[in-house]
Length: 455
Image 1 (cartoon, rainbow, N blue to C red):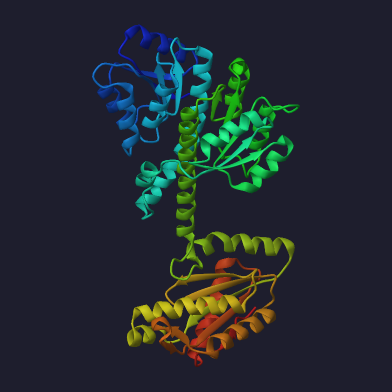
Image 2: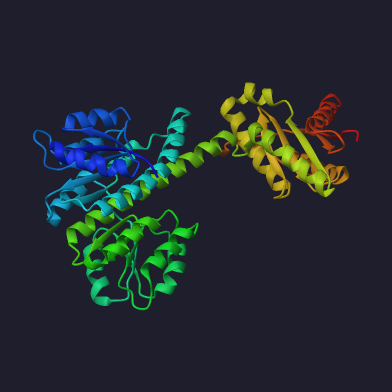
């Protein structure tokens, strides 16, 4: 897996050494010798991951990282800090500045490549979501950046999988003030609990008795319900080879014992913030997709959705030799409602009409708003005669009582004209044309009635 890596260091031999090692793994490497130069490269979108030295004159790595994470165009960039400082307090300071990971000088090349590949995979997945979310912002969806910066990674749900009380009790004490912690001491049950629990982070001990923690991590990555949940391994220092294997499997982070309390809290918060950001991107994309095919006033599917799905439904009906019918509806004299009572009252009528018709049809039927006061109901596995009975039921339900307006202060009586048609040998355009003609006949013959199209 390739990615564009920006290496930032004021010492030229360090730059060249890292450039050679990363280039040998087919990464595209860019070099910067100071903080301002690195910020400019990142803001231009010329890198995927930043490998950032901490000790630099002028603007140190901590400040560069803070600025990257505070800017909307660079906040999503993964930052790996390279430091000769090996105290937990230094790692905590970097994590609080927004760093995603650390490597300590002298750099372990194998560990570095494993971490870079892990973050590259994560960024590629997030980039696709971020691109769609940015498109959605242009269509009126909310911008997520302010929420991402404000989130402190607190009050998350953390699952700890560990069967040694002396180990998990320390973890719980360290996290319980900032997170909601659940402990599972039976690894075989952890997959089920994780799938059902909506957790923000899963921590797995590699010291489980009679169970391979990496196999548990692989199982969690393979399940749809837990695939996006961050995984953090707790291991002994001598477990280096297994930790690197864990990164290859998709584990997000790890800590080695003895676990520093402050670093644990900081890394957990970092992973929870990252998950919430990814979840927000997915929700934003899903909302934009729904907005494209859902009428915002009534909550019904819109004409775009109908155009993309009616042909498929008709094809399935023809292939299975089952009937299919459509019901075209038009609220009678709807313009008069708007002119007399105002457009807000008209919106109330449209919402009430949609709800009443949906209650009168089957759950399997698809109701769409075509625009204005025009609607269409697609009825799978329905003959013309059955559709006629359903249409009469809808017409009677609409006429039965007035629709509430002015927050329930008044009611407006309306009726509906209906035209129905059944799928024949023609295509869906022919089906819709015949339903429209039947609807027009209902209108011209006095409204508040149902007309059937010729077969």
